[in-house]
Length: 367
Image 1 (spheres, rainbow, N blue to C red):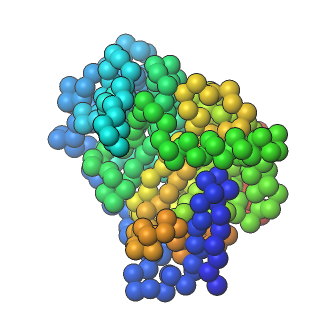
Image 2: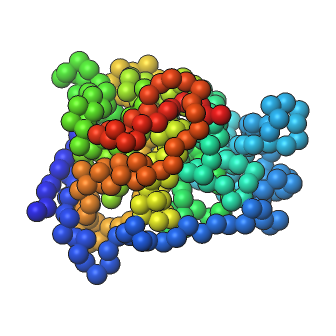
């Protein structure tokens, strides 16, 4: 039977409709699209080593040798050659003509080139390499939030249907001069909850989900992976800190390392379960100037692109999800349990797959 669920973070309604899976165009199954590996290098790729001049001058890098003077690198951040928003020395000015308001497209749009290897992908890297990607996000978020009010959004697109234009592994960071209406609603709902309860909605939600367990995929000492109660897409997954932290830019190294472990294994489980499906993920964080707020907490949202909105969704604004979140979480727990054991940990913090004694793994940086 279908069910309407209200998203506690936006107050929007989502229709959980398992019967929709019986339509002729079904979502991918475990026998879905196979992983298509690009070549190890592409001489025409602007992100491959040896073609650094094909990108704008880099903003940040991790040298391969640990020596800042090294010409080789393991990660670079460069301006996007085709930006959504472009830097300027002045704040964006708003213009109003009659009923219409506009603003100059001032901001920042950066590309995080995640690896020199053209055929690398997050699920295939080691935990340290994925943690380096998150550290690059943090470093650039810190630099960008100091420039002006607004919002900084790190995100990753995987697959052509998710918006990827180049196969070389990369993600992006956009800084906007305004806080979009969708984010304002998130903050307004969280602020109202804090006024009523005296605590953070996101922290309380995580505590309640861990106690319930039905939608939890896995946990580490500081981070949890779960399918939200009102998931908007099949197999939508959130990675959430288990303590309060409003801004991702202030996340400590230990949280980034444990988030990297969960992120790599969760993306691998999605690929093992569904095939090489397109997805987007985004790091949702407090807007600039509100880093110390008590009512909001950063988190990372992963949204596989398995369905397309149709007339009902467009007409009502109600998202239809054909996979119940509890079922999605159970499938992902099983996929995680089937993954091979990682190398021995450098820390003693426990890694556990919820409700599964058969899958117990270390967290933190791996050798």
